[in-house]
Amino acid sequence: MDAARWRVVGVSEMGASHRKSAALCQDANAFLRLDEDWLAIAVADGAGSAAKSELGAATAVNAAVTLLAESFYGYQLRAGSASAPFDPIAMQEMLVSVLAKSRATVEARAQECGIASSQLASTLIVILLGPDRIAAAQVGDGGAVIELADGRFETLLKPDSGEFVNETTFLTSARAMKSIQFAALETPVKSIAVITDGLQMLALRFPEWIPFQPFFAPVFAFVRDQSDENTASEEVRRMLQSDQVSSRTPDDVTLLVAARVSP
Image (cartoon, rainbow, N blue to C red; front, side, top):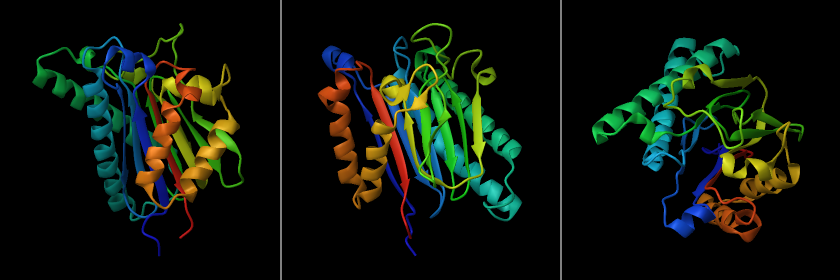
């Protein structure tokens, strides 16, 4: 039996505007393989106006995947199996708790640094992905697109862009926990892509945020067909650095793709 049922590539790349100003990449991503069938995924986009948002984004995603793993193993122990009857309410409670604890971790890091938590502001997307179900929650913009077993593409999480262009909600803001978007599906997922807002206007058709299939289809196929995740990551990084992408968005960009492979 193949121990890795998911091929995963996660790349956060500095945008053209940050390369010109010699700034740091303010996006971050992380994932953990929880067992052969389950993944914990987190993606964050640091606020451009926050002095240490790159630290906030990195802190948020690392805390989130650790908390997702703890929640997953706890759920296994309580339910007897991760494939217990589908319970979206329990999943929502789990992911809301992960977001709240991730927020607390960022706030604690800010205190350690002697700065306001707003200086570590970032968005945060958290996802728990299994063989026959998926649960996702989000504070802020960016999004997630899934490819179902029948080949259809669906937007799982849509950007929360606020009332104005380039406005969103950050994990450290007062209204963060009231703004959470949540989605849960009991269905096999063939592939998933999680993006930050630097890619959302390229990959999603505004204003309905419908997946742009010519963007996602080749990326999903490429990741699934690669046996070496490191090589695949470098290819995805080159794509994100290309003129085709950088000429259309000056922002930092993150693309995390997980594609299911046959055992």
